[in-house]
Image (cartoon, rainbow, N blue to C red; front, side, top):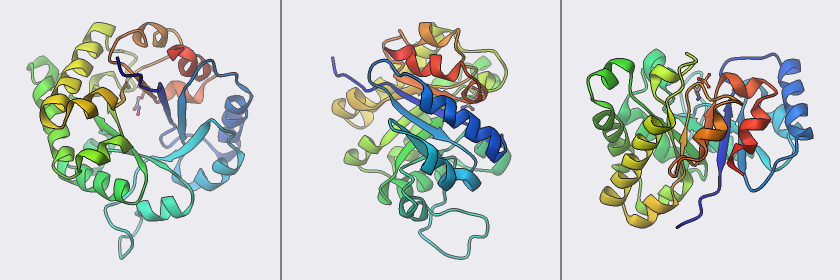
Length: 250
Ligand SMILES: O=C(COP(=O)(O)O)NO
């Protein structure tokens, strides 16, 4: 059995003033983390440098998005190379809000992932189906399509820099968390897909984390599933219960 380091991301999305975020960071800095955990917090890009100065290890900052190019006439975008230059080592890509609200296609997510990995960043690559797709029994087809686009752009060795976040769209921000069985089934299928399409080593080593209404009450049980290697947390990452979620993988 390959040991995979438990991984928790806190996705603050477009929430919080600098003062409010600094209060959250103080709470994270004061927390006691049991066992081994890889922890990243993703504040709004405007606050990344300030929060990076204040955040204590083992926590690291992450960006919530980055572009496909190193530099150029791309108003409003952030280059993965600029993130690396600013000592930001992680980026969330392909979040369902980027896909549904801002038009990030499978190909664009894949190209962003490629550029981020080439810039030396770790990538939290988000995939997941809508309620309509789940009800039409299309979950596996959707996540495989999204994974395939990424796999077409990166080499086997680059998978070591990728954490896959399975975030069913119908669970994000709704309070309707996937059951342990539902999440485990998709995570196991993703791992089998990696074994078949990439390699058994990549399948064994890649962290597959769950996101969608994770909180301090449900994280402990979810974390016992064989193929849930951590969480990508939205709303609860802004609250004191985030510490319990980080410690749920002990
Ligand atoms: O979008 C999410 C999950 O959000 P919630 O935890 O608020 O459902 N993670 O990136």
